[in-house]
Image (cartoon, rainbow, N blue to C red; front, side, top):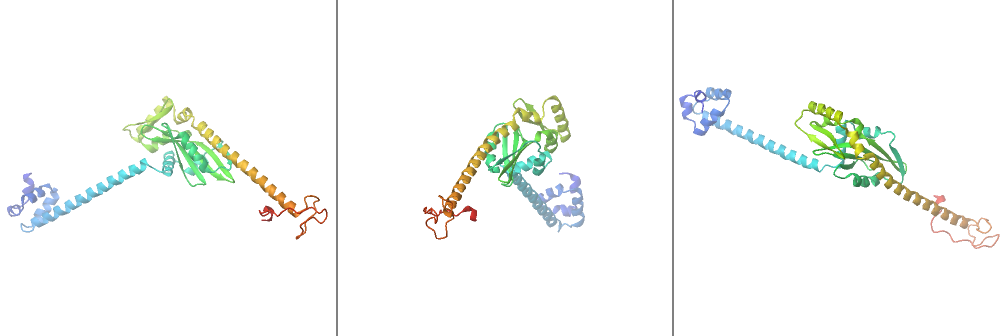
Length: 316
C-alpha cells in the first residue's frame, strides 16, 4: 500500500477506518483521495467512503450487466446470422456490392426471357436444388410477384454473391432476368467486407482471411487479381449462368407447355359449349332459329336439342 496515499489522511481519520476502507482509499484516484481527505472529518469519513464504494460497485455491476447483455445480444445476432432468412442474405449481397435489389435487376441486359403460365415461385426450388452444394448456395427473397434468387459462391469463411435471377410477374407469366454480378469485381466486395480476399482455386474458390486492414486487403486483392483470376472466372469455371438458364428453361418450358395445353383444352371446351348453345338456338338441320317455346323446328320438324347445363359463356 503506497505510503503517500495514506499520508493524505490525518491520524484521526486513519484511525476511524476499518482495514477494508483503508484499502479502498488507496485504490481511489489521487483526485478522489485529496477530495475525501480534505472534506470529511474523522467521524464522517468512514460513511463517505462506504457510500463511494457502494456507488462504484453498483456502477461496476451495471457495466458488467451491460457487457453481459451485449455479449448475449451479439451471440443471438450471430445465431440469427447463421440462420439468416433469404431476405437478409439478399440484403447483405446487395450491400456488399453497393447496389440495391432494384438496381441489380436494372443492370441486366441481354439475359431476359419470358414464360407464359409460370409463377416466380415455380423457379425457386429448382434453382435451389441446382445450386445448394459445397461450392454454391441459392437464396430467394422478395414479394411473391417479384422474387430475386441470389447465387452465392461459398468460401472457407464467407459467401460472395456472384449472380442474381430476377423473377417478375408480367401479364400471364414470368419475366426472367439473369444478372452476372461478377462484372462488378472483387474489390467492391473486399472494400465492404474488410479483411476478406478471394482466390480462385480450380473448380471453385476459397476465401482467405487474415489480419489485414481494409487498405491492405484491397492491395492484396489487386495483386491476386493481377496474378490469377477474378470472380468472373470463378463464375465461368462453375458455369453458373449456363446452369441457371438450363434449370430455368427445363422447368419453365415444361410449365409453359402444360399451360399452353390447358389453354388449348379450355378453348376447345368453350368452342364445344358455344356450339351446343348454337344448336339450341338454331336448328342443327336447317339453321332456322328456334322460337322461345319451340320443341321442334318450325321448318323441318327436327327436334330441338336439350338446353346445355352450363351457361353460354358469350352471355356473360
